[in-house]
Image 1 (tube, rainbow, N blue to C red):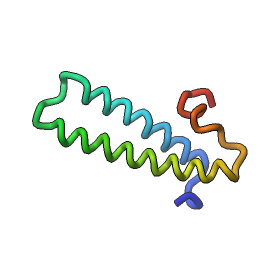
Image 2: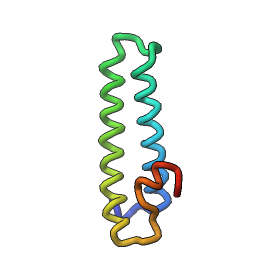
Image 3: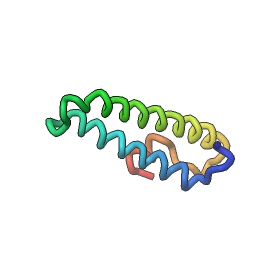
Length: 80
C-alpha cells in the first residue's frame, strides 16, 4: 500500500482517522449513546484505532526515506 498512496493522501488519512477517533471517544463518554449500542460503538473505536495504527506504520516507514514529511507528533499536534 505504501507505494500506491501519495504523501498528501497518507497525511489526510492520518489526520482524518485521528479526528474520528477523538469524536468516537467523546461519543462513548457522553450520555447520548443508548446502552444497547455501547458494544457496537466500542468496536467501531477499535476498528478506527487499528486503521490509524496501520497508517502510522506506513507513515513511519515512508518518513525514514522521505525528509519532506513532517515528524508524526508534529503532524498530529497540528504544528506541521
